[in-house]
Length: 132
Image 1 (cartoon, helix red, strand yellow):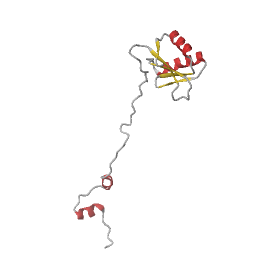
Image 2 (cartoon, helix red, strand yellow):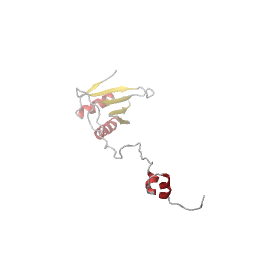
Image 3 (cartoon, helix red, strand yellow):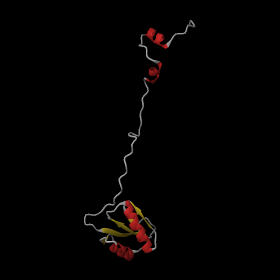
Image 4 (cartoon, one colour):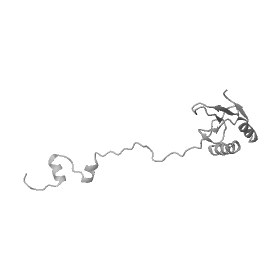
């Protein structure tokens, strides 16, 4: 080594490479990528319960997966999630029990068949008993 300092452009010229600015040379091989795709998230659509073609709400008494405890499920009401929550709250108050709304299905705890049937009739919904 001669101890003589040489610029990057001169050194690249001696090697037969075209001179590049230092900033571009450093970022030349840099690749940006994202696995998320678009940054904008689509706006969620309000969840509507699946309704049946005949317009009847299906009432069903279920015990499966609940350690033998009965639950009345009401499916097929063509209402928004907010309206289903209002109906569930009304039914829970009238029956004096707990319940929830999951995936467009109202669940009322306990075997409250008659009360649920009467309240749905008062609200103007046609219903059928499904299952056994």
